[in-house]
Structure formats: structure tokens, C-alpha cells
Picture 1 (cartoon, rainbow over the protein chains, first blue to last red):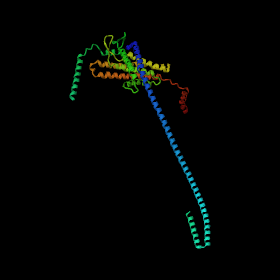
Picture 2 (cartoon, each protein chain N blue to C red):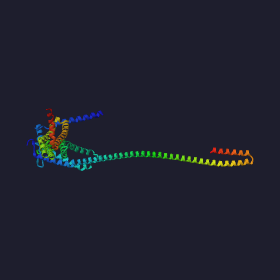
Picture 3 (cartoon, each protein chain N blue to C red):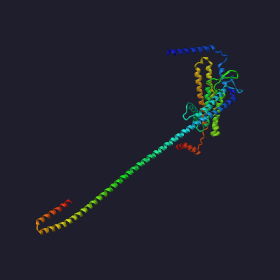
Picture 4 (spheres, chains in turn cyan, brown):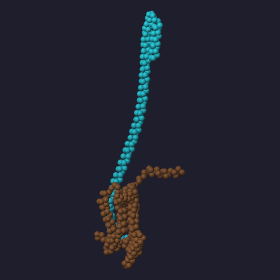
Length: 164
Length: 286
């Protein structure tokens, strides 16, 4: 053959290379690729897990922020209700107090007028008694003294009315 | 300090001068060792056949066996001692191994996206074999030829038989990808590039042989044997190792990707619509 080409040697080289290729594949290429694939899968899983955790954290954060917002709204609502109730209660108490005061005043007025009437009634009787006594005194003699005592009694009654 | 430098320089100059004188006076008389004979031997290996289990083989086959043996022992050592200790955070050696595997794997995946598992394994083996085999030339191991002379073992692929074997094997690997992906259509696609195995084989052979021939030429003359071989031999060999590995691996991957690409079935209706769309503007003008 030209150029010293020898089929036997070509086949020998092929045989040699095939053995080498098989050995390199099974001992080096495949295990290293397997290891790299395993590592890639591990890091992918880690990344996925981190991503999931991040998503969960984000969800929790948004949930808690929503809860906080709801709680703030609830607090505001409760505060407004409480203020409203307090205002109502105050108004009610004020009205009650005013009504009570009015009732008390009415009662006081009624009592005062009854007392006045009673006093006036009592004074009329006294006057009648005094008139009777004065008439008796006049009848009996001393007109001046009787008249004096009459005036004193009338002044006394007037002072008492003014004091009330 | 200056005196010391001067002394060292003087010693080096003296040693070099002594060596040159020694080389000139001890040079053997050349007995018809013509450069053309040397180069013919380097190409054809007609006079330096070696014995292998009773067979007359070129020295390149012994180189191939030694390179394969070294690679297999290395692979066994890595599999037994290194791979079970691989860590998630790789060390220097693990990084080196992973980088080499990833390099070939990425080439396969990039050039042949549809089908690349087998291709990755093949180009890994071929690439490592070509690279280490080419660097093997630097060691310059001696072997006894059948004629009883000492022969320097060169790169395995500087032997045309090894280059043909690898070129044709690459071609069959490409064809296997075509068959696996597209059946008979894949065979057709591969046979279309019928010159590929020859071009691949002779590219490998020519590239590696040229490096060896340049080295032979340089070593043939004593005057060129100083400093220059360091550049010529080491740099040429390194460059060849890298370039030839990359070229064969890339070519195999590219052709493999091309023939294993799935066939795109075009819909007849859409085809007709496309033809109509092309025709319509011209009819409208008329």
C-alpha cells in the first residue's frame, strides 16, 4: 500500500482506541458527569427550597401585614364605638341628671309652697289667737300694751317670711 | 552583588563554550545519513519497524499502547482514589478533572443539541488521546527496532495508520449519530460528506507529522541544536496538541450535530400559502 498504509495496523489502532475510549468512559467521564449532575441537582434543590421559603416568608409577611392592617382598623372601629358609647352615656347621664335636678327643684318648690301655705295657715291661726288675746286685753283694760304686742307679733312673722 | 553576578555569568559562559567545543570535536562522521532519508523514515517507517507480539508494526503503535496504558492507569487511579472523595466545593485536582469533562461535554452539547450523550463520551476520549499522545512526543522514549537500531517513539497520530483509524472512526461515529436520529436519511446526510474521513485522517497525520519533521530538521544540524529545539519542539508540540485536539473534536461535533438534527416536516398548506403570498404581489401589479 502507498504511504505505508497497513490495514492490520489500522485495525490494531482502532482496537486500542476503542478499549481506551470504553475505559475512559466508564472510569472517568461517566462518574464525573454523574457527580456533576448530582451536585447540580443538589444546588437546584437548594435554590428551589430557598425560593419556596422566600415565597412562604413573603406570603406570611403579607398575611401578617394584612392582619395588622385589619387589627388597626378594628382598633379604630372599637375606639370610635367606645367614643360614641361614651358620648351617648354622657348625654344620657346628663339628661338624667338634668331631669333629676328638675324633679328635685320641682319637689323643693312644691315642698316650699306647701310649707309656706302651712306657715301662712299657722300664722292666720296665731293672728286669730293674738287678735282674740288683744281683744281680750282691750276688753280687760290696757289697750296700748295689747296694740304693742300685736305689732311685735306682726313684725316677727314678716321677718320669718323674708328668711324663707 | 555585582561581583557575584559577574562570577555566575562567567561560569555559565565557560560551561557553554566547553560544551560547544566538546560537541564540535566529538561529532561523529555522518555515514550517508542524508536528511531526505531521515525524513522518509519519519514518514514511512519502512526501516524502523518494531516487534509487537510477533507482528511488524510502526513505532507509532507502541506509542499508542504506552499512551493508552498511561491514560488507563490514570483513569483507574482517579476512579479509585479521587472520585469517591469528590466534594461539593471542589479542590484543585477535582476542578481540573471537572473542567476537562465539562469542556468536551459543553462542546458536544453546543454543537449537537439534539443528541449528544454518546458524542460527549467519544470526543472526550478522542480529545484526551490526541492531546496526551501529541505531548508524548516530548518524552522521546527510545525503542529497539527490528533492524536492531534505537528508534525514538513519536506521537501515535504521526503514524498514518493511527490517523486513518481515528479519522474513519470519527466518520463512523458521525454516521451512527445520523442513523440513530434520522435512520436512512441520516446515512444519506453523512455519505454526502464522503471526503470527510480522508480529510480528517490526513489533517491529523499532516499536522502531527509536520511538527515531527520540523523537529527532525532542526536536530539534524548541530548548529541548530541550541536553544532552538526548546522553542521548536516544546512550543510546536504544545500548539499541535491543543490545535489538533480542538480541530478534530469540533469537526466531529459539528458534523454529528448536523446529521443528527431532526427533520423539519413542513406543512403542505403552509407551503402553499407561502407560495401564494409570494405570487400575489406580482399579480396585483399587473
